Length: 431
Image 1: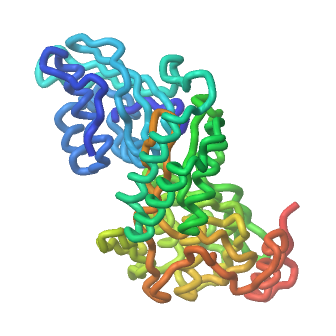
Image 2: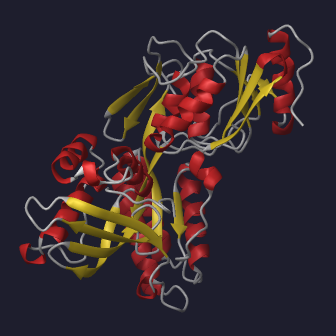
Image 3: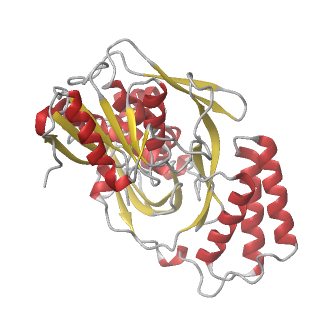
């Protein structure tokens, strides 16, 4: 689970058994904190921490706003599934995260005297308890109907293009009524079939129905960090691999370190060939190191109701910038997707980088997770990026490179061109 090993203080919170004054201070304090965490409101969390967390007595992990905001973004919040123990000063419960339905155990202790400040909050992943595991046996007709209806409602209410969302929902309900899915009893196969059918209607690669079997996956350090290798090559050419864009609070320091390490290079190669996306704010932070201090308009995000948010490079960054004048090459592949495409597309449209490799996967829309039941969820795109230069995006078509070549040959081609930029023909990939 993505919050393995964290000791944290960490929209509304869904409580299986809502707290009451009879529960005591610890339960009420936990409910207040969790509601703020789920909302992801920085100012509200900071205010709460100032009032209820005794920092002088707390370990460094306690009351870390950035970790809480990262956790909120990664998990889409938590639901309390079962309260395990309640006393005046201690509360513990089973939680499940809204993004993947994985389980965690949370424990909070508070001071006995008002204002009942928090002295401990532990949050750790656990395997899915047996009482919440999928019942043995095949997927039955009743559950199929429930899942189809829940998926249709989520699409209809949230899809970025409302008219397309209504058509998809209607088509899904019609197929269900006609018995199109009646022979599918395997949960994973059912999720895959719904995904294929919905994508055939909208051609949106971000729309996905997923099934979780309750097993706790092993931690993936590489995926958590998002950054691969960094190398200083011959002739002062630097290469950095970015394999994902994790939530910004968690990787801000890593971005500073990585980008500062390559700031003095004459040419920079950014390898996005294995990048499958992530947090748009992290994309902006990386891009900010590739321009000077004057803010540059990278993109706008338009929601289904027309609400628009603009993304600009940061006027100040920690560490040292590579800057906006030296050559940048970006490596792409057919696997480059979502946020990886966003960085490539924005840099290309602004003529800040030369793209080398393959046309990318073609997934531009931003996606939110919606629960269908304890084990199924659906990712529904709810907003779309609009580039201020091209007035469009790469949805369905991918980002086309400036220099087309096989992904496996992209680094060699970038090195050849970079060597010419610095007046050398001796640049070679490291062994």
